[in-house]
Image 1 (tube, rainbow, N blue to C red):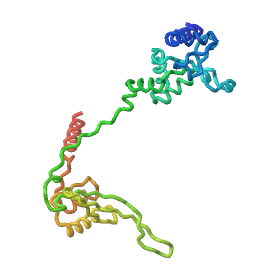
Image 2 (image 1 turned 30 degrees about the horizontal axis):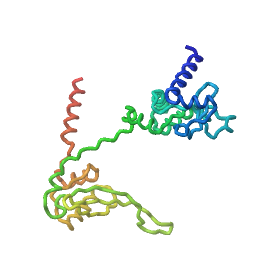
Image 3 (image 1 turned 180 degrees about the vertical axis):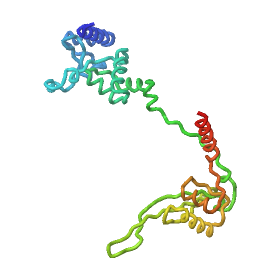
Image 4 (image 1 turned 135 degrees about the vertical axis):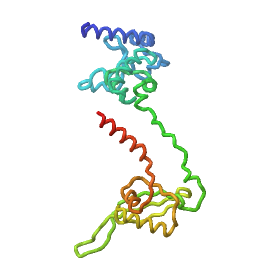
Amino acid sequence: MSVDSYQKAELFILKECQKEVYSQEIECLSRGTNISKQSSLISLSPFLDSQGLIREGGRLEKAKSWLPTGEINPIIIPKNSYISKLLIDRYHNSVKHQGRHLTEGALRSAGYWLIGAKRLISAFIQKCVICRKLRGKFQEQKMADLPSDRLTPGPPFTFVGLDTFGPWQVLTRKTRGGSANSKRWAILFTCMTTRAVHIEVIESLSSSCFINSLRRFQSLRGQAKVYRSDRGTNFIGATDDSNIEAINVEDLTVKNFLCESWEECGKG
């Protein structure tokens, strides 16, 4: 088919679509009389163009020198027409599923004025499979049961969780050339049962600084039964230096995985 055939087919479909809904308006406009005040098109100042299509009047008549006719006087498409759904589908895909505003803008730029476009486009997007995937809600992780440390009654700081935060700049000393700054960190001790907090300032992330902060904490709060922490190098080094039997959660899993992988590589 040629381009001219496609244009004639498009014109025929649009005219038939308008005749199904706006036959009375077309008859009034073709006779040069005003349409009924009860018509849904009364606020759009409609008129018939040279091809017999109903177009929206608008207020952009003086922009004909630089704007196309479709943008100045777009073709009116009925709300409940199947053509409106096809147009929304086409231009929604052309804007790569980027929402109602861009889809409506693409329709207006193409020269179409859909009656009730906001609701039609919103309803279409709600049923669009790709949009539902892109705008779907994130799944929430179901939390596990609280450990026994959080539920066992006992004195404060019996079960302790700890972590490091920082650094921040502090003024250590003043010299003739200016002031000397250095970094400081802090160890956060929190009671797993009462959520009480104890903070110790350290000068570096070394194991020795952490051991000293732990000794200061124990001298004030007493000996704890269990300490929980991440695998920070200062914590790991402190357990090695203090000969503490630490339980690493991922030890068995990681070691088994590495052993299996190494055996398979050795066999190959």
